[in-house]
Length: 116
Image (cartoon, rainbow, N blue to C red; front, side, top):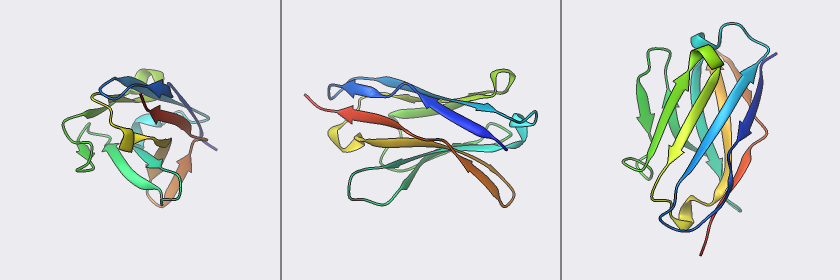
């Protein structure tokens, strides 16, 4: 069973930056997982934010392209989400997801609030 723990959320002003991290444990094949970030704003469905494959190929939601960067450190079993130029509409709970075939694991989420 893979456990995922997100960190790095908080309150930031519009235009500010945050770096989220997601550390995986319970697996010795972290490098085999595609890692994803999702978010869920109040009253809305969970939505895809960014993904990084085992070959370090990345994909982003249109709403965050050019502002967010996903990266991974397989030696630390950790995936990161660097978020720059944050906007109020980025306010949400951010979730980490590890995917391998038909199996997926979720973290508990970390709250990001963008407000002046």
